[in-house]
Amino acid sequence: MPPDDRSRPKAAPESTATTTSATIPEGALTNAAAIACREWSYRFVRKCSTPVPRFGSPEWLALAEGTPAKVASTTIAAVAWLSDCVNAPANLARELDQRRRLDKAQEDARYSTDAADHRHRWGHLALVPEREDVETRVAKARLPRPGDFQPRRRGGDLDAG
Image (tube, rainbow, N blue to C red; front, top):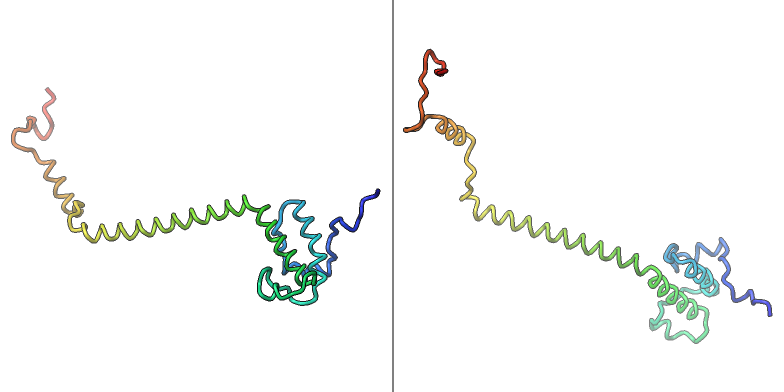
């Protein structure tokens, strides 16, 4: 028995792609089978001429079974679920990266606050001398101390021997 072509997904015509792309986000699915499923679902979404209610909402529950709006809403929810499953690894990696960046930003903010608080509390005990004080200490260190070896000087030169 030959395959039934009616059950196969067909690409949506260009004219309807713009009206349905607002309902099912373009690029939401990356797997080839999922893309085929998305194209297949356009058939149900295109049949609905009224606004599509959110799946499970009171408006959706009030619709009769089999109405184009109810079928379109169910199809959109199914494609969204499929998109989440197909893109789960990439979505998880993106969420983890966002969380890592957020945690790092919070850690940096805490560190900045703690460092400023520490400088405020303990800054008066800092042992960093002023430049003039350093120069004075270096000059004193160059002076001979009692008991240091004093070479004999002859005309300003050191005694060679």
